[in-house]
Length: 149
Image (cartoon, rainbow, N blue to C red; front, side):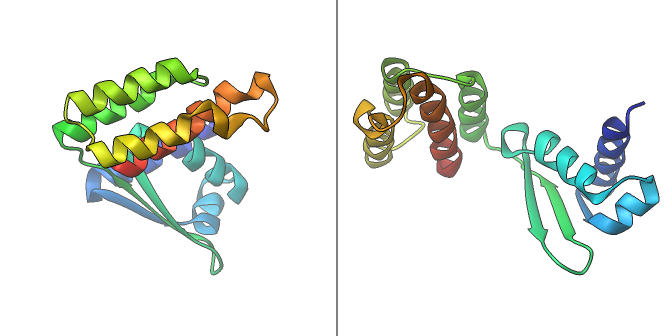
């Protein structure tokens, strides 16, 4: 088993037992025999909001971290499904269709839909190289939808 998988399994066991995992980065790194940055990597790549987790972190004193599994309502589960389906890039037309659909299905309110539509508008991305616009739009759209949860 790889070191990353070992760390992940340990954290998942802690989550199952307690409903949350509270650790100190340095202490866990010493226990497993790795560097603290390996712990950071696992948490940042495998315990994300898109994967259903919240992570609270405090620097200093060994680097305290608290991981909690998010319990979503049906509405929030649908939004998470949509967030996860966006991928690494999206054009304005597709993003607009998603947002209009979310509003029409009453998953987001009209005022939020208007703000989100403004955030994905092509005018916001004119300063970026054309090859970067769709990936930046996707990242911003995902974060804005996460904020709606």
